[in-house]
Image (tube, rainbow, N blue to C red; front, top):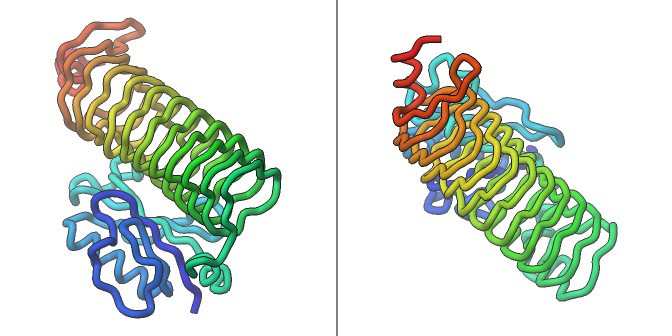
Length: 293
């Protein structure tokens, strides 16, 4: 029976869930298990948190990965294309031999300094150094400078990400300077620039860049361009909103080009109306109700 790695970022994580012996690598973000056991656990955890799951798993990216969207209420989920979803669980097939090697304590590479150029990283602990290029498959990154390459899984706990492609895993601290984010969970740190194209942003600070899809569940948005996805964060300070769904939080200022306003506090901002900018002290939902197009 094939095993899968399940990942669920956010407050609805798996950390306090009691599971049977067939489950390994249990932590707040995920676990590894056979598909039948894993799917059942996901349904149980979502039910315990009063969340509404999609009727089926959808194909997600490459490598046989699949995702299960979930919503805050049945009303949000009804006839929705996913834009109102507040999160997702991702399951990815794992090779049993690779999974055992990575999870065993003391097995795998340990890197304490120097420069890494172009080889695959199969798992282990990166304590410090400069990563020039290569494929990171799994492991723990504690500190250092990432200059380019592909990240496929594991946890990034500190240091600076300068450029490259992120395809999954957990960003737990540090600074993101640029590159492409294609999935996974950004838990803590500062996002300065780059393209966010799917996954979950949980905090801490977004300064600039392009958000093109995914869920923003926590943290402060200070500037940049929002092209799509669901915002349920803490504070939107400034920036341009071009599409997607604003579900909650405080909008302090910025430019509203279009999209769906479903809830939250609107302080002030500019709303694009019939080709012109209009200052508004009421949310787009109220503005367009009073000023039909």
